[in-house]
Image (cartoon, rainbow, N blue to C red):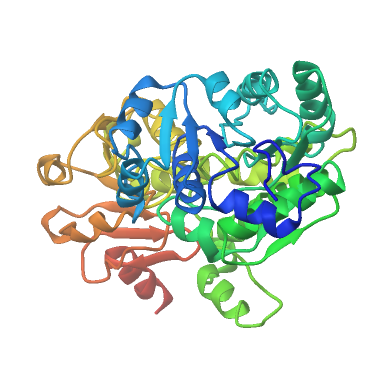
Length: 463
């Protein structure tokens, strides 16, 4: 028995035949969006099925992939996988999404879904891609959405949009949230976590489950419907945002408590029902700061806890700068006479992403106080989006610094020779520094005075 290419959704063929057809490339796959998460996903699909076309609007990205090159940096194993799958003819790219849609029977969408200046979900790219897919959507095709969206997007937006563009409703539509992180994408896709799938109908869920059973070595969790699957992804981010807000609020009370809050948190977490996250100078990236608004601004009810958590986390850059200004004042230095180094501009170590990074508002506030702001980040070539002058780590030693703020502790910062600086005020936003043997005045968010001269002075006062 043979299986027609466009036959997984609603197919009457035995499931074993459907699986074989997918696994051997008889069911072509298109992946829309070849960015930091999309390219790894496309490459895994390609190694699994041998028949994938990736679509991206950036011609340079398409050209690089077709040459077997990987434009995504610092993803272990990805350059090799792209090179191998392209050489084998299993993966190719196009800058024409409609061309990709015309060739595919499984359509996987993983495009950016940011928020607008009004904090509302920006689904414009998703809408555009859905229109391209719908124009070439054959009966029996499956559309899979992996990018994070507000709950009910598949049901209320994409289902009618696709049906209208296709002129029929004989297609599957499922939400299967990406659960990956930069720097470990291939491992996450292949087997790190269970894969969640949920369709707009039972048949969509069945086909999505069949497909992802081949993509991941972990289990596939089929939930009730697409909306539930959408909520799973959003809820994961909401949990982290609220939890971090708790840690951050506790950290702001460090001096009033007169204790090391980080120590208290770590000790509390030895109890299995407690899992408080780490405090810091703010929450960045394209996920955690955005996803609360996929609920806050999409429901009629007041999401008071989510809104409060956002306010707490958004206030941490200001708290960081206020702490630095207070510590400078204790040293007799005014911020408008200070040269301050901001260490780490990306939102987390080892990645190049700067969206919503707390380093931005920290640099902006320091500049508004009149400080000369220098920025150092080994992941970036320049500091163009920031109110700071980009310098190398080596250039810091001749910069006549008054202060430094550790925002993102890239491992390259471990090589900083702190003893080469005259006494500085240092605010450690991540608890990553041990400057006890130096003369620097150090304040760690969540711990208070943690080393050098400031800790010594605190001990003298206590005596």
